[in-house]
Amino acid sequence: MISSEQCRGARAMLGWSQGQLADEAAVSRATVVDFERGTRVPHRNNVTAIQRALEAAGIVFIPDNGGGPGVRFEKSSKQS
Image (cartoon, rainbow, N blue to C red):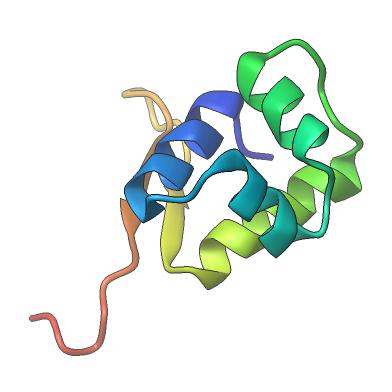
């Protein structure tokens, strides 16, 4: 499951508002706001929907391998 920090970072990389992410993930804006603030952990299915929406837009989530979790754009097949 992604962290609130990864969510904020991914959304910023895409230039999406919280409302746009909510629309893309089919969750309420309050769910995104509360998750990103860390005031509430949404139901697992909502976090999954948020993650899938971001991944569909080209985001890759990097697990914590000792250096902390991260976010990057997916490499396109055009890149070498």
